[in-house]
Amino acid sequence: MSLPIESRVTLSSDAFICDCQRRIWGTTSSPFNNLVGITRALKKKGVVWYAPDIEVKNKNSVFAEFKGVQASTTLAISRIARATNALVVPYAHYRNDDDRTYRLRIFPALDNFPSDEPIADTRALNRAIEAIIEPHPERYWWSIKRFKNRPEGEKKVVSAKPTTPYRDLNNPIF
Image 1 (spheres, rainbow, N blue to C red):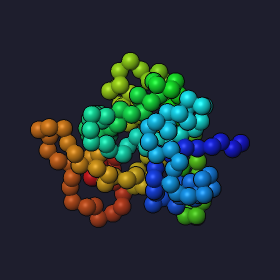
Image 2 (tube, helix red, strand yellow):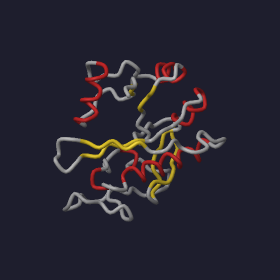
Image 3 (cartoon, rainbow, N blue to C red):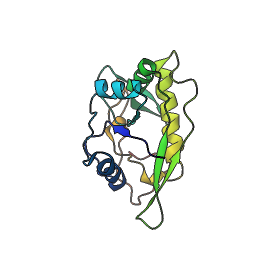
Image 4 (tube, helix red, strand yellow):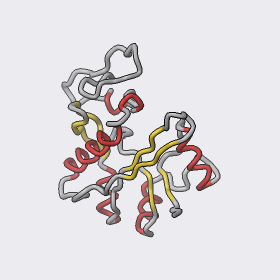
């Protein structure tokens, strides 16, 4: 089965994502790089990929728990799903042991999403991300800025770089 997939990503360092974007559009740039284009695509029953764990610093984000730490999380997915009646279906791609191929895992659509509480929706998204990274936490992008910006009055959670690539999910090193 083949589906057209739209992406909010304009450039990716992940070879798998870049390859998919090239095959779909002939480039790594998305033809839908704004919310209007994404909303239009979804209303036409299109498929859109949107990274919920990339921080946006504005009124469209809140701090929601992620592995026991408050993390900046976008409200956009909840709002887009409400406006378009779209399902939110988490997926993951995992690099195989040969370091050349990937396994794609499609998770069930989020239940009761969007809810009447956008902040609760952000927590649901974070739980989905937690499930996605569970098999390979060492491969998660722990250094993204959503952990560096803190709620007012909270101490930074940035610590020294680990000596090994593994990061314990119960004691994340950011």
